[in-house]
Length: 150
Image (cartoon, rainbow, N blue to C red; front, side, top):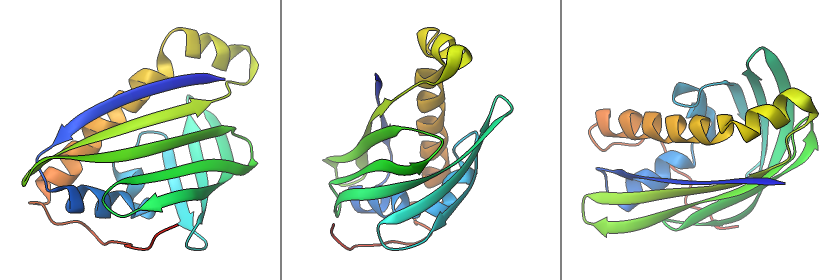
């Protein structure tokens, strides 16, 4: 299994950053390659991705969710094997550090080569940068929130 760890500082309060991250169906607006996410239950999401022409569908289960602190998940069904956690760290009243840790299993020669060349790390870095732009241009107002705990 491979692993990526990346973080970014966003100029919004921790609650705003966390609340926006719980709006999984908005991920295609800032995550390249994510075509659609359906929130099927409070803890189950269905993902459709297309990266470098390869389309995948899979389900991911939220395994832990603590408001303003963390969201953890693992895939449970489909064409991708991964697990991860995103944590939110209050820097001050208006700034938050968002840290993403992703563990994934590259499949096939192309994915294994891409993994060795740092493709997933660059993808995660870009997605976090687009998340920063997305939430900051909204003037600190999230599109919604789910404050439940798992």
